[in-house]
Amino acid sequence: MANFAIGLDFGTNSCRSVIINVDNGEELATSVYSYPSGELGIITDQTDPNVARQNPQDYISGLEFIIKESLSGAERDFPDFDSDNIIGIGVDTTGSTPIPVDAECRPLALNDQFKDNINALVWLWKDHTAYEEAEEITKLANDIRPQFLERCGGTYSSEWWWAKILHLKRIAPEVFNSAHSFLEHCDYIPALLSGVNDISLVKRSVCAAGHKAMYCPSWGGLPDKEFLGLLDPQLEELRDRLYETAYPSNHAAGSLSLEWSEKTGLREGIPIAVGAFDCHMGAVACGVKEGVFTKILGTSTCDITVVPESQNVDHIPGVCGVVNGSVLPDHFGVEAGQSAVGDIFLWLVNNIVPDSYGSSMDEKFETMEKLMSNDAPGSSGLIALDWNNGNRTILVDVRLSGLLLGQTLHTKAHEIYRAYIEATAFGALTIINRIEDYGVKIKEVVTTGGLSVKNTVLMQIYADILDRPLKVAKSDQTCAVGAALFGASINEGFDIFELRDKCALIRDKIYQPNPEAVKIYRKLYSLYTDLHDAFGTEKWQGNLSRVMKDLINLREDQR
Image (cartoon, rainbow, N blue to C red):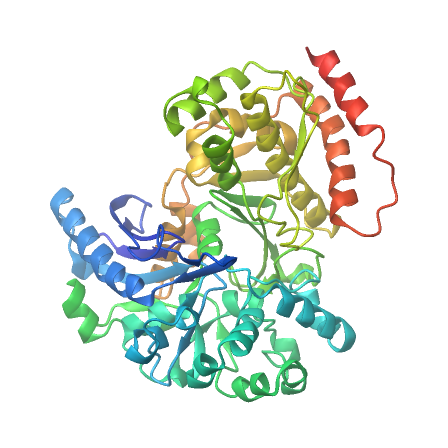
């Protein structure tokens, strides 16, 4: 008898489900629900480009839809499928995506009092309004609790838990004062499915707590009351209404309630794993293990690797956290990422690329990729900084912006496109180099996400710049598959490492570095690092006067 699990993946613009056979990784059915609120599911504010919120009702409506739709698909296409053989449910979401809730775990935004209050909504991961609070938290931690920053890369981010809650308190005290507590999105969904209506009973994710909320058992869990009180006395009071313990995702958060059994058609009592962030679960479906660096290539990127806890890697400056159990049990999960990759390419094609390349976005991309596939590295004389949406890793600074250097009157749009692809790859190499500098060796890279499947030119450029083999996960839904694997893992006899080895499938095509291109890209990367340090750090004392001429010389050599 086959065993199945269902993975639920809540992304930035939509949510999706996948049902898999956990004996071999076969995907039986998938379903996608696009969030209807706002623009592509994101509620913004025309007066502040940093605002990014979501409607929790979109999650609830989507949850019911994707489960019912995927069950229907599996029953239609696989006559032997029986939903009674679904042994677990796993959940991943974006993060840090905190939700103001009452004592019964109900989002405040669902109450009539707050239905039109943008600050009572879900604070999406990409909301950057709390940059001043992030700087304040970083300064205070450096002054009195430097250990708090060691596990999260040395700088606290505006995208993270405490910065957002503190900012909410300052700009909307009526919302903060009405919130009994706050839930990460990845904690809310398992609690909702389990019928948990007491905030003190919610099992919190160590992935979310460790990477975004400065949680670590060695200092007693969350930051202490004295520290929080120095930020704001009401944060000190809030701590008692949060949590003391956080759990990895091979633990159960609960089991499917009768209410959600009736809503979805799943049997009551199916175990539900503790939630986690999308990229961390996606990494498991990519086969993450020691020496393997997984990279989700989408509008932005999230990078994950793991280190056995015996290696005891405490501190890697600039990464988004080093957290025990956040990816795999008994391993430190190391998270990094880039704030914009695909979004840069979309900006370029929508605002810069002329119609001579095509009448539609897809035609423009296709034409540019065909033209630049014939260009040698360095032949355009261009170099860029990929900071159009700030820098997440390793500078952790949302108040940085993009740069394109080396343009002439002959520069073409496809050359600019290639320069930005190269810039994002240089950004990825900067992350890998920083991780390796602290004793974590990276031997190969496994990618997933739309860009890794659609853009072969990009993938070869990445292989050449990273100077490592690039593999591509077989599944198009790796985050949901990873969630499903954790849903199965909370059952006796289903080990997450064995599930990973059976179900983390890789495509046949492997991109190998081209030695000649590697040599040229090393020269370009040297220029990139100069620009990176000159514009991104205060301590750089070099000289940029040679950069343009070096680019021209390289262009002449490569043409």
